[in-house]
Structure formats: C-alpha cells, structure tokens
Image (cartoon, rainbow, N blue to C red):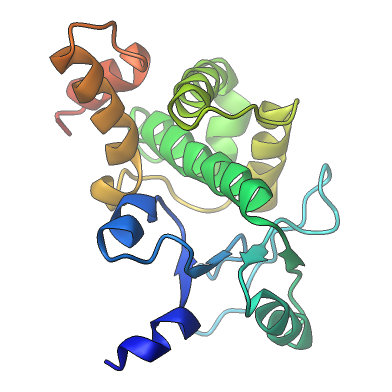
Length: 204
C-alpha cells in the first residue's frame, strides 16, 4: 500500500478500533460509526433513527466525512458529520450498547435486543451505568445525559436482532482489559458486574 494514501482510508466500525489504529500510526484516520444494520443478505438496511434521535445516529469523522455522509444520504440513510471529541463519545456509547445488550442477552438464551430492553431492563441498566463510568474515567470525558434512554431507544429500533457476545477483542474485550489493568495495579475492578457475567458465561 502507498503510505501516502493511508490518510485517505476510512474505517467503518462497530466496536473499539482506537488501540489498533494507534498501533498502526492511524490515530487520526477517518472513521464512520454505523448505526444502520442489515439483518441478512438481500434485506433493506434498518437506519439508526430512534424516538430519542429521529435525525439518526450514524456518524462520520475526518476529512472525507462529508463525502461519506453524502453517499449514505443518497442511499436513503442518515449520517451526521462530527468533530473528533463528539465522535469519540458517540463511538463509546455504541460500544457500551453492543457490549451491554449482547452480554445481558447471552445470559438469557434466545433473547433478542428488544427482549433485553423490555424484559431485562434492570440488568442492562446496571451494566450500561457501569461501563459508561469506566469508559468516562479511562478517556477523561463526560457523556451527555440520558445515555440509557438513547441506547434503549436504539434497541427498540432494532428489536428483532438476536444477541450474542461476538468479536470479543473489539467489543467487551476493551472493558475487560480495563478490569485486567486495574487488577494488575492492585486497584478495584471498574467493571465488576461485567467481569462477573463474562465469567458466568465462561467467556473469560
């Protein structure tokens, strides 16, 4: 690959890419946070529009962000252009969503994302709060209020999606790495509930 073209790469993500991007010298690479989803091949995508964010949640960051947004708009999908700080917050929210809802769902075999939001709300609420606190401390930032409401609204928008803990390294693995680091330093686990449920399911 021509190194001069690295700055033109656009990374589309559904997890935590920051450590990998940093390891490749691509900390400022363009990124797209995809809140649209396709349940199976051939089906139309479900856009990330919710009752709390009717404008849509998909976001792009970087020098090609406007071009990406234009292409998605042309395909009937929403996409907003954000600065790096705002993008990072939204990226972490999506990471919290997928890590929390998939883990709680895995504890209840057969549960869809919608079932987790409706039937296991107290479990997922506790996990969202825990993961949000850990992420905010690690990244030294403050999330916008009402995160739980936003994440639950998104779950209602994609309620039929199944749950499973997948791509551990890129999702729940980031939070577990915070737990491992704290333990190694003799500090309290910042995500004790998360760690407990991972062990319960024999994921770690």
